[in-house]
Image (cartoon, rainbow, N blue to C red; front, side, top):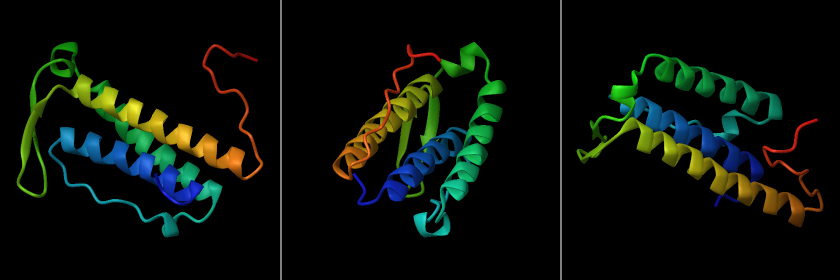
Length: 121
């Protein structure tokens, strides 16, 4: 985990951006949490990352989503994975850190509301 709520949130967004760019063979650079000091800043980054993810997904066919893709990393390493597997990883990674965020909020005396998807208002 990361030592602050802000660092946790920015890490989640950095990872999503990294994997989506890697799937497109594009370079990626992490955002520094210090450059996003407010909730509004983090939300703006979230919108930017989400838009890029949605743009990428909108161009994928089902065949490409489930087909092997060679991933190339900046350290020269390579791997072969399906975009679907990478997207699954992005989601489970975010859930993991969101759980840490909720635990941090509870420790700080601010329990998070129920966020189960089956809870609709």
